[in-house]
Image (cartoon, rainbow, N blue to C red):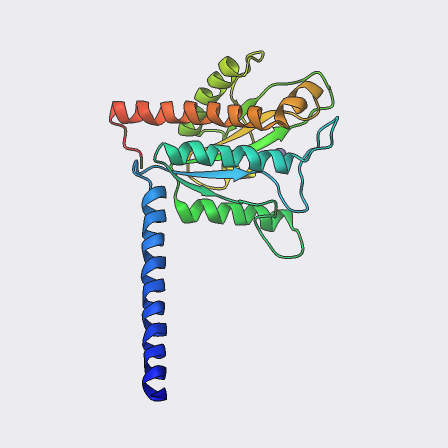
Length: 237
Ligand SMILES: [Zn+2]
């Protein structure tokens, strides 16, 4: 009964395919449910640099800023997602955002802007590390766009947490003329998480535990601002 056997095989294959499709759909639904944001707040996390553009480098170890930025961004994503935020990363690997074989800074920045605009976020957090010719300069500092009230509000909160939690000489949040802050209408902050030109900051920033601490500090500050907005009845969108 070769014919029946073939038909049976065909049936089994067809059923297997259907089951596989159902299983994949169920898995996708589970993943979507697990990562679905429940608080309705979207955050774009922008790990600065990437690809051919490594940013600044550590004075002692030569560690690239782009790698540290990515690592902190991923910790940030973890904390925000856990708290029910919808998180979008401009890049999730070491490559440039613009992709392609040839790196172009302008194209890369435009690609970041496109991610921001496509997601209409409630906040953009750009993650960077700083560098300065004077090696003793250290500490984390937060920037916002000129005239951006909401950005200033978030930046001031994060700076306050940095000053308290990172045990550093207090700094103030400042206006910064950065593309990522100016490229959209959405509230945006840029966190310089420390100076890679300072050996002390560098030794901290290259370690996972400090990266996680910085991320948790930024998350806590931002979360407190959204909580306050909710308590005040401020519309989030
Ligand atoms: Zn940078």
